[in-house]
Length: 103
Image 1 (cartoon, rainbow, N blue to C red):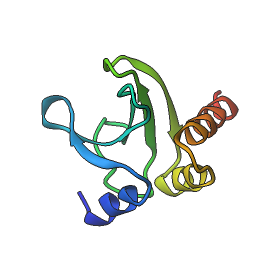
Image 2: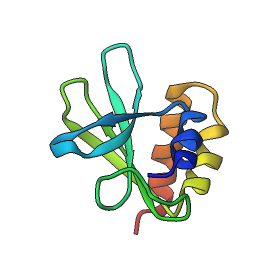
Image 3: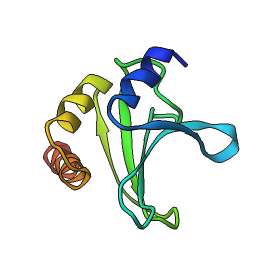
Image 4: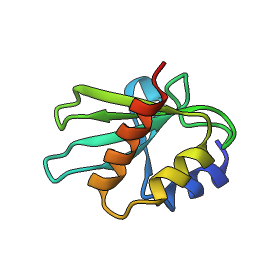
């Protein structure tokens, strides 16, 4: 994985964590109860390129999947994520994006 990708996501508040079977993902805790989101590529790994599609998936503190949203690339995600200031606003913007882009 490129250092640039890790740095790019660190500026958005994410950190690299190990998930299942030695895979890594980009992690951000979203609430004091331990709820979190992961950013991965379509294969469930950290994106190898800022130009490739990605998924933001939201989980409960217990690790139960809640919802996800896809983005055409990291720059599209950054643009949306950076428009809001709080985690709650960021997640609401992602959910709105998901609803507007569902087929």
